[in-house]
Length: 519
Image (cartoon, rainbow, N blue to C red; front, side, top):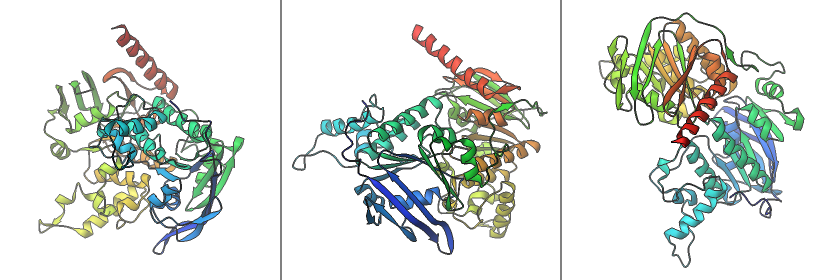
């Protein structure tokens, strides 16, 4: 079932106009004189580097924060939102980048958010499920049981359930913040189809993404922010990657260091001896996987949804017990949990930044939390001076934009990721495991993170990168393992290209599917 594209009665008259929006946190201005408008059925792209002000603008439009300056009008009438619920009441909703649905409640309750159908105060499970299923069908989750626990869903399903929960409130404007971050192509296409259906149904959509090809394909107008201010707009055929990069970076010249049309890897770098040896490793999804990682090497792990990329990293870091196989590290068997791995100079950054951050604590504490035990005053208290100096030094290494005293949640996504990677630099990590290291990160921050990884390998550190971004893997990796249904089906070595990697992924995926159907 898809959206009813014939009924636009609730959305056709909608128009939101934001005029001169500004936001200050104390003496710091994060948004200044930004004007933005969108009407029924429009799909408008919102682009900009991390820290450009996109998130702040979204929060101002949806009631998460109140703007310091400016006005918001809906259908010509001024509005002031004190909470996101007030924005929702007039049809303005946002789906955040981070998945935030409860994991211990049924899908139906998650979708309806307590707004259950009832008669004289009475309802039934069947009525709740039927109402939820209507909205699940709209987001292409017709096969999901409404009684299923939301925590058991795949990342894509969880994100679509969040969208379904928003659609259940009959919105007139939906803001999608990085909706396809860390999603492989076949699952991103579901989101793209949904955006088009919303537009046809008369719902306005603001599409926020660093994937510029998606913005180009989906949007008829693009608004760019830079340094908290409006950098410009693009319309129709003027929406090109070249033009968008110019607005994002403040130059009309394409920066070949940030992005290139052809992502390929030709260089054969000199690396050291074997540091990690994985032999016949198995887990829940992973089956009989063997490979090695050499000192100073960046090894990529490629795979579609359900391939086992993330599980493989968890097995290596001791977050999940293997069912079979052995891992040898620096000549000795690797055993114990994450603390034992950390003592042996392994590091790990999981896919979800929110799971890595120490919220409510400073950048300095987040940067040094893995090393502070070696630098305590009198063996009891953290050495604040050392912590600050170490954070400043590591911050310079990773090109961090943000003071050591800043709360980490106040940084942009790209800078948060730099902090999370930087904390392992303080420990002189020898093997760093990264799951989707540049998910939702802008092109500038992405290049800076890649530079940091290369600098680490120059000092002999090995890096394993699991990513759905095939251009990332072909740009920075010395070798790429291709996983299909938990098994290594190919290993690419230089020279290899993005096109070759994509072809290898889908060729083996199709072959596996045909084999499974035959059985």
